[in-house]
Length: 192
Image (tube, rainbow, N blue to C red; front, side):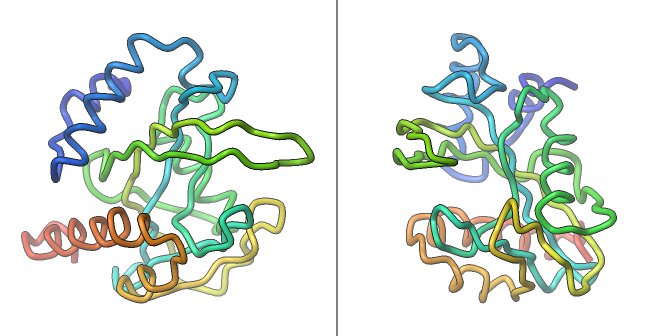
């Protein structure tokens, strides 16, 4: 299934997701190079809410640009299979040997604004990330992270993960939502 079909089949959790999914579908149809950073207005990114095997901890990475603990993820970089891109990013950023997808596809969608910033000595203009999130798990262990990608990785309880973020909008609107969705899956018996 391609990302357009996945997005069309995805059932939004709330109004934010419904509106963001609609915008993503529009941009997917109207923007060139939407899977590449070459599109400097908007491009697809992926994230994963990476759990341990008992699903009571979330792995967060220290994001150097935002100076905050955040989910793992990155740019699609030309990959149209966003599940594969999310898996690649989870492995790269965590240093884990294996990650496994939980559920049946997209876990969350969000349009994220990115303020202009310096990266590798060059200015990157403000733009949008069309972010697709997947729920995944890996073995809980001391993971090395990736110094080229982040300032380290650390396991948090879901509540601690929200508190560890120094980005208020992300903590309140995204990470809390991911925890609510995770709890709903648990209540339905879809997440042990």
